[in-house]
Length: 184
Image (cartoon, rainbow, N blue to C red; front, side, top):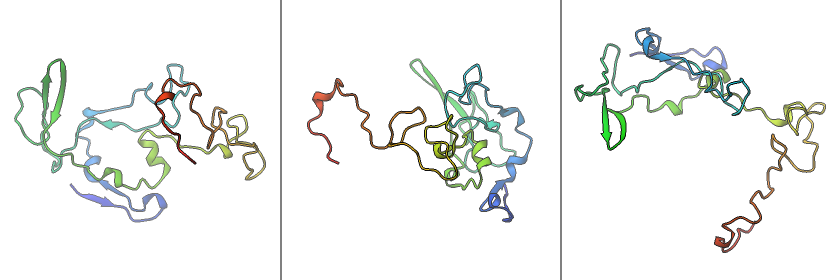
């Protein structure tokens, strides 16, 4: 299992490494595409959850630490207790499975993505500031050049007050449980 380090030719390849094991085509029968309704859109294709979408095909098994190409990983009821094998757990009516061993890619969250496309492969769309949008898209948008918000107070994407306005209901059922409010 060799790790290939990129030579820095663009900002996207800086601090970038790829595992040669990923390039093999032996595991294609385990790879599935994302479901089309799971990308932040409803059945009509309208965006209902922001900043979701895109994504690449995923491999749905846990990578055990120390596994190499050619190792056999089995899932079932009568499989040996060996690293990477999945065994069922049955407790009362809950049925689930457990995998033997440690997870291999423990440092996956410390990896530098390097560019916006790498984040898109993970299924996360870009977050755009309201100031750079058009006025039809956001309340902070519009104007020539780098214009300020253009309102007395900032607003959210849906026009509600943001950044400092108290949003708690005035007659909330748990008001009698509050002894003293926080001071600013």
